[in-house]
Length: 125
Image 1: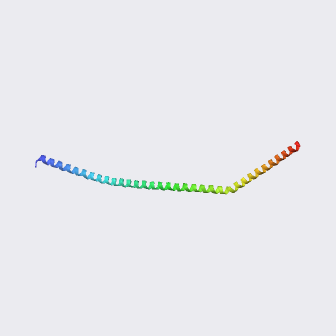
Image 2: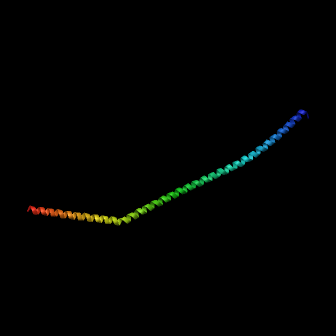
Image 3: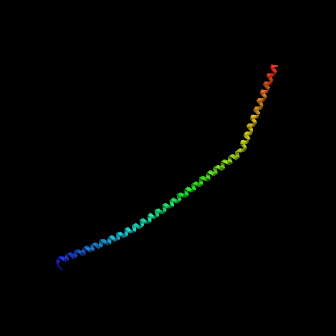
């Protein structure tokens, strides 16, 4: 083996060691990248599950709001009917009082008109 061949062999061996070291470092980095990728995938999956649960919660809240609104409307209708039922006797009494007032005023006016008419007839004779 010549001196030139030895130098080439030594350089090749050193380059081989250097490349081996670089490959080992790259393999370690690849393992870290794979672990990071798995962690990112788990996070993405968790976010997807959370989004689905939030959507379900929104649906349930909307359903609950609709039920509460329907119950409130039913309660208002019941209150209105109850108020109308409670006020009905007062309305009847007020109508009766108005009818009596009209009858009394009509009677008084009729009495006065009859009296005036009678007085006019008496003066004319």
